[in-house]
Length: 212
Image (cartoon, one colour):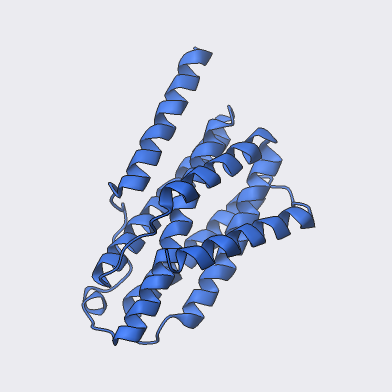
């Protein structure tokens, strides 16, 4: 039974990776972007800025899928697995929304998505192996940093890009809920050096994904 469970978990991870990297996913919730806003034309400079920021957000959701899949694989705790599954479903919505918005803006997702996914999966697996408190603490800190990142995007997105702004605002709401849920479930406060390392890694990813 344990061997079957391990095989099933590995197959689920493989399926998640294929769907995430192939773009073969759909949101369970409707996009928060109003249809009329999505059809609005932006000046070229504003369109390029919005596309770059939404590409970064899409990469963040690729990483989120990898992190949650790996952390779920690393634990046998059924309640913790349910926690990761619920959060991952929200992140799939974000993944679909950001990809759809990129298409509307006439741009593409990051060419390095397989690399981002692989790196995030390895980090998630390590965090998951350190036990529930650390694993949940990692989720809480990740989501806290993502909140800050999304808030900065709301400040940088063109005021006329109502569609992208609506998507980012809903993502911000969801990520705050994930962080609070992880803390309430027993997530530990991570050491400051770990938080700084996470922030540095995120900075490298966001700056690269902005262009590539």
